[in-house]
Amino acid sequence: MKWTVAELHKYQHDVMELDETINVNKVLQKENPDIRDISPVHVKGTADIDARKVTFHLVITGTFILPCSRTLADARYPFRISSAETFLLNPALYNDEAEMAHVVEGGVVDLMPVIYELLLLEVPMQVFSEEAQTNTELPAGKGWEVLTEEQLAKAREQEKEKVDPRLAGLAKLLEKNKDTQK
Image (cartoon, rainbow, N blue to C red; front, side, top):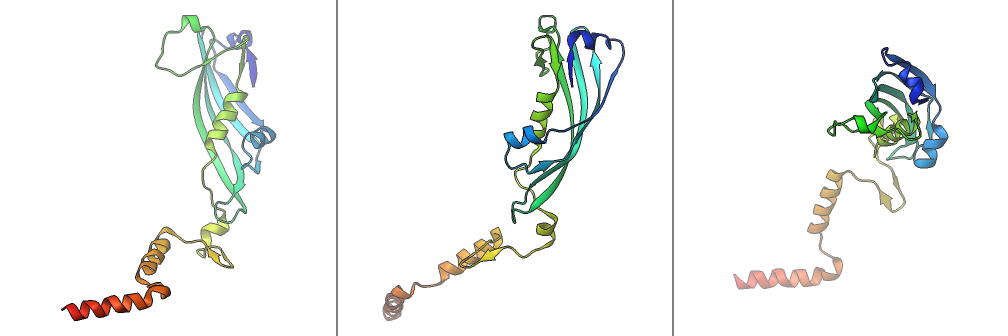
């Protein structure tokens, strides 16, 4: 997925078709250790080329294997990314500052760093395995348990209502004092 500017100019009056499957597993795992595995990534799209710029219209599909946020088991996360990426072939001739564009360095357009970036941005903050989604029981162990926000709020409310046993005598004394003042 690398072309020289001269190679791209051959397609200047045509639409260049892209349809490749690439393996990006090792590079992405090195960049983000949460990625346990990634299927071969399918990149499909077209490129519009003129004298000043080339715009790639890409659709990138595949599947991440990530740790489940609840159980740490493998969780499949399919993705489909649509993106339009513009490379300026001659930045001096191009004046549209409203458009975000990549500058061609060394006379070579390399799409791989852009694909890596798009994939890394697609990794979700949380993902749940199918088992975690179907099982409503949250994990627990000896002396600990995972609570939902509602369960936590209810537990905190119950904790407020309880009187510390060390202060129970003081609480009784205060109650007796309130009763005598009435």
